[in-house]
Image (cartoon, rainbow, N blue to C red; front, side):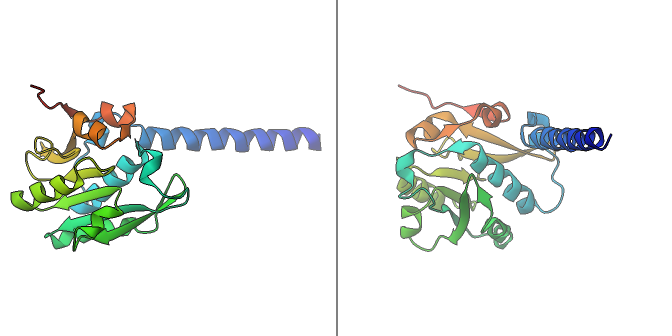
Length: 195
């Protein structure tokens, strides 16, 4: 009887683990309506959560990292103090790599970066940074209107008080980035016009 009780207890633990795994998958692999959730909390806390998920659903080419255990570096170029919320990502782990957030102060920030977040409405600065990041293995994320048209990869925007995002497929390919179908299925897709 004790053996049966032990097996039942083990089966209950297994079922509980499956239930927790399913709940996790529902939260992570959620449809666009949930990805584009209402802006609750501060805007940049919500964006920080999105950026963490983006990093989970984007793959960089092996050449983007020198060593297997290298950090995933996020360069933050911002003139918005509230964007400092992104520093909460420091030391979080994604697929065995720690995230390291560093502020943009000079171009060398981009030399080690895998993600560049541009939190400014200064179009000249955005174009300058996108020009530097172009053809590097950098996931560029911005919030200025027209960011994807300027060559950025992911552009945040608000729609009916919900945070949404647009993905420039061509810019992602140029950067050598592979995006999961879950991420692309939640995004508005932008394709550059080829002449």
